[in-house]
Amino acid sequence: METESKDASKEILIRLARLQSDIDYLKKHIKDEDIFLSEEEEILLQESYENEKDGKLLSSKEARKELGI
Image (cartoon, rainbow, N blue to C red; front, side):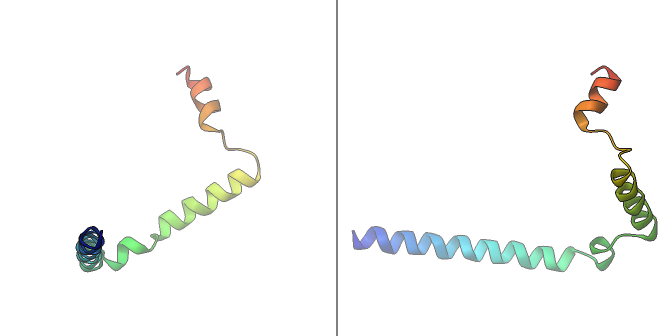
């Protein structure tokens, strides 16, 4: 039983090390411009919010129905 517990602990530590490695890789390769919206994206997002508020957006179900798919 103790051996199984040690094996499980070892496996958890290995997985944590892999996760940390993945996080380090992502932190190194994500650029600041990937985190923030461009000015155009901000405008489009605001327009989307306004369209939603005004009831101008279709659900995906409604869109498929209109497109006949």
